[in-house]
Length: 408
Image (cartoon, rainbow, N blue to C red; front, side, top):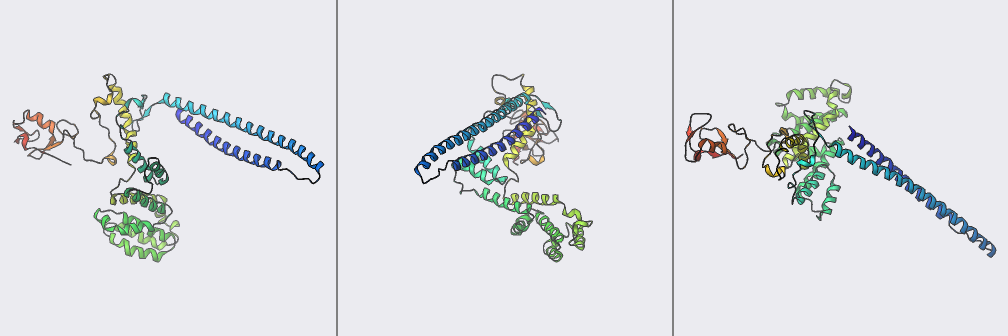
């Protein structure tokens, strides 16, 4: 709560100061132009008048310049005072962050008052600057901020015109999603038609979702004949798998032009556009063999989920910590961190004997009877490489050499 309040204070002061700075600069520019117009000399014809005019003009010029300088100094002092106040608030925010340095478990809502810096692995990003830079560039491309991605590429000395195939593909995806947000489904339908073979092989239903949304859009616009023609051409093939939904869609055509006031008004819900756009992004990335979201975002998100458990692990291990860093003694984390099924990208095997997860040095081994255990458990059961042993789950006997490594 204190941290949130401090952030709001700093953000508000930044907005006010930005507006004040722009306004002050505009006023100063206007004052300078006004002073310049006053300093333009006149040209009287008679010598006496010219001399007196010059003297009077000099006095007026000096007076105008003194007023301009005094006004500029006054406004400058005001801005300086405001900047000092903002710097003080920023400094206070930093102290609050150091003071409150805590993490809340999103599931148990338990707060861990521990320094996050203690669980940082100093070797994690050693000599990884190119990879980090590329992940940042890819993140900007995934989020459609190509100008920022190109700026990072330029700072890194890369040619902006030399975009990778992946980056060009992400540009195409962003263009289609932008059109969908503007309620234009034509680019999406063209892409679906061009990749119908790959989508059919993957059992993807994105084509049905896109054409369905276009059908509803045509009905809402009063284009009943066009909607029926679209359904006959593209939706009929899904009759077996989506019969119930198609019956409802066909009945909705009776209310063409007045769908919003009918019992089928839910077909026009705005969230349906978001759902179709999300499904399209997933299908698009699957066809082009891309991650469906920024890898950098996924890593940061996973880190935020794992952080509370890592802090709790640190509290347990701090007492037994030696002179070496905590990460130096850990090849693998001694605790299991569930990041959710949506973040599992590889098959996981847990040995039924040791209850430990398999690793590259301790892979799963398939026994002749069909049961699978990890290599360390296999060697522990056999005791020696030549000794025969019984499977822990059936009476069959075997030797170590008969087991085969399982590669996922």
